[in-house]
Length: 248
Length: 287
Image (tube, rainbow over all chains, first blue to last red; front, top):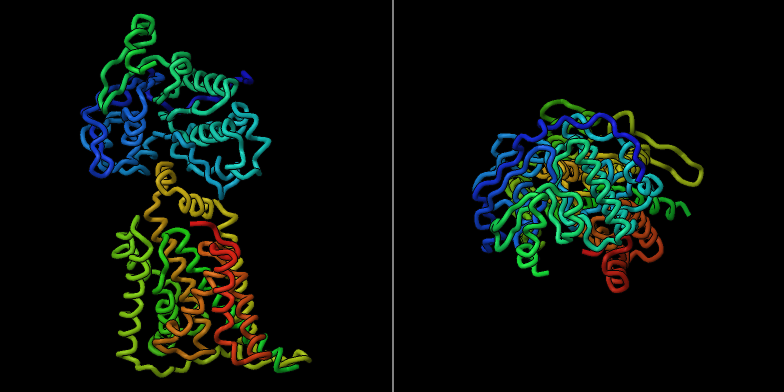
């Protein structure tokens, strides 16, 4: 991973201030009640990880914040503005970006088109040179069809394309899923660099080892509720509990 | 030999209308997943709007080429906002039935007021007359229709395949939820796409008015063949629709020369053969 300095960081909320506040969040897929009152906060500049078993409600939480799940209740405040009733395009334009678990690379678009697809929603996004500095592989594959990339390159592309939008709050859903250890390490370095630059990151991960290298705080999700939360400093003391929660 | 060239020209003219109409259908199907059976009625409306503009407003053919697609396109967007948008996520059959119903109502209204006979629409002065090419006589207006249709088809292909707006359209065809989560107002884009597809049908209607006269059922006669063209080319394929439109027009024209009895059925025979060999069409994608 090249360590050249990034350009001026995007305009972000003051470090440490509360940027996302989720209260009593409930969500439904059709008639299925998935989230049963989720409560948590994310401070500006933090990397917060949602942990939990498959089907616990982690991805649904991200999709609810992004407005992708329309049937939801409770309160989600981003930068002190209520967004529970906002549509996903409006939420994106407020500065929240989402990288889905399935990566969402478009097969009818080449790498360049995939990269340039999300519109710039505010000033301060990373210029292309810096994105290529973070992910040099992409520069060599610009004319390739998006879905012809390897799994790791697709994940890089999925993260890269939201970095140029100017969004300061990134939600990454299982970015390491199915990837080789060397690629996981590269993505870990990237997240660490983004954090250093002032991005706020809400991460969903099943790979706890990976999460522990980048996260500041953790929340454990089970049956659509947050059942525990602790900081990285409290991690060692909570390892036994965590193993029980995650069933590892 | 002159008769062969004449049939080839007729084939190219018909191919122009097939291409413009099937292109609109392909754009609409790609984005809305709706098989737009109202397309023939909207094509007819394009011709009628040109007729009204000329006879009620004194607005000539050249302005009608611009205004009729816009007017009918706006009508299409109203249809999409008030009716078609509610079909999102439902089976194709609902869209097909609704648009078929819309086509019957629109055609019925026009038939009620204008009967079934055709009304003449004059060829503009600049495009009257013809050219002797040596091997055949080419009416200028017919040459214009072929060339103009080709230009419009290529421009539409360029818009969709080579521009940023086109990238949004293609991406939204694959995953509208994610495209919206990037900050793009997908519902508005769907409405505009339907307007574009309908506008292309109306444009074909204006081009057709001086050749085929303006009749309430002019679209109903054509739309079945156009659907066969779309099925052969592949639903949702832009270039497939254009190439197949022109190619089938020519094949139909050649059949009229070599075996006239089969000229009305050759397109459908080809459709059956393509469906048997490649059910997604020659250039289409799997559903």
